[in-house]
Amino acid sequence: MPESKVRKQAAEKTAAKKKAQTEKKRSDNKAKKARLAAGTRDWVPWVFIPVGLLGVLWLLVFYIAGNRVPGMQDLRNWNYLIGIGLIATSFGIATLWK
View 1 (spheres, helix red, strand yellow):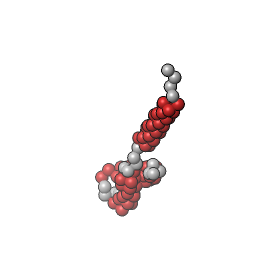
View 2 (cartoon, one colour):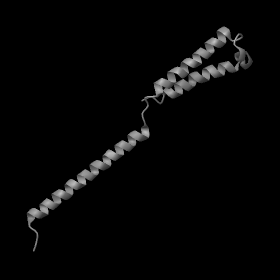
View 3 (spheres, one colour):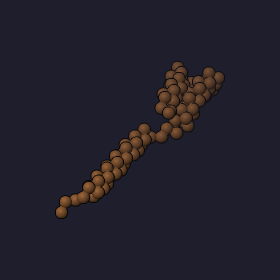
View 4 (cartoon, helix red, strand yellow):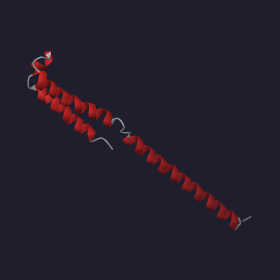
């Protein structure tokens, strides 16, 4: 017995609904994967601020009391590289902040 038009329309409607649900799930999964791939960047300010301040503090201690701090006098001009390197690293980490 041939199917009536009502049944055929109902089947098409169900198929369209199913297809829409599948597409929505796919788009949700893509969005979720994109969020997970990017990750959260809440840690960035908690890292780059102390690293930058550590660099500034390193240079201040070297300028003010470099000859009185035991290991710092042995490093001589490497102290500049360490302090400025920490500051540069801080700026590098800051670029990760969204």
